[in-house]
Image 1 (cartoon, rainbow, N blue to C red):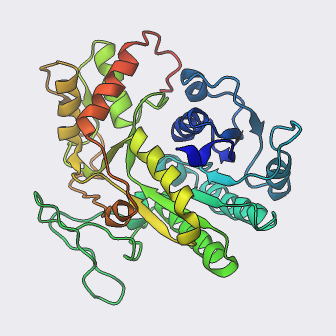
Image 2 (image 1 turned 120 degrees about the vertical axis):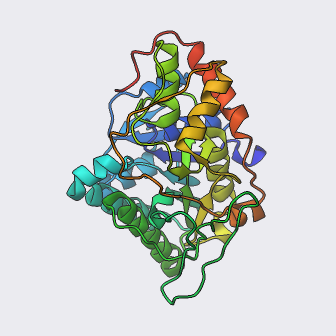
Length: 353
């Protein structure tokens, strides 16, 4: 990690769960980090001991103010333009995006354009990498047993799991998404491609699956919500029927993917790369593993309130990221670390409902 020592790094969306964990890792490696976020406070940064992190309050859609932030950083003498920019700011929840499509388009698409345009106008020799947050949701979902197909009708690359007959979405597969959030992130990928291939900007997008870990303020997320239920003496609740199959990654894996893509960005200009576990799990299986880690014998309460994702399958290939040297860690070990982190913090009031 010596590559990061004294690197100037700007992180948009620094106050969020993933952004805060990324900032924590960067600070620990010796990087000079400045956050940029529209939020005035951050329970995630506070929970990770980053109260003193320089945090500029900016709207990523305002290109002039974003560029000013890149040129002046925290305002201290000696700050120059950043070596690396991580762009994580955006509308990050699919339900929120679906309910507010105009805001989602504006923030996720115009915000990405604004950040990349500001980077393009900085001295070319200075910017080593711009890594943008995309999502596995650009691919949509598979029906059980189906194989993704490209627009030309050819069979998509299939990284078939040894324990599954289902194929995995590959980076070359055309987006099949119809929801606002997934489509907005597909547009992010196209903007990254345009600036990477068209202008030579060392920009790359990371399509990671569901992250979990310390300092996640959203109880609506499966792992955080399940752990909070257990710590508060309730049976875990599953809103659907538990059949949806997804990939889950410890936050440390996602952070390592961001750092790796930044280090390799100049060889990946304009690309979008998946980050996924080797083995996806159903929602029900994931909750049962959390119960096992917590030493509980309860069965979750299956509410069947929302069956919109019943039977959906979200499997991504991780072969390209593995080829760069990344490997997913053990999900159970990640859950053990996460359980201990929350268990040691008795006060849960900072968590969002």
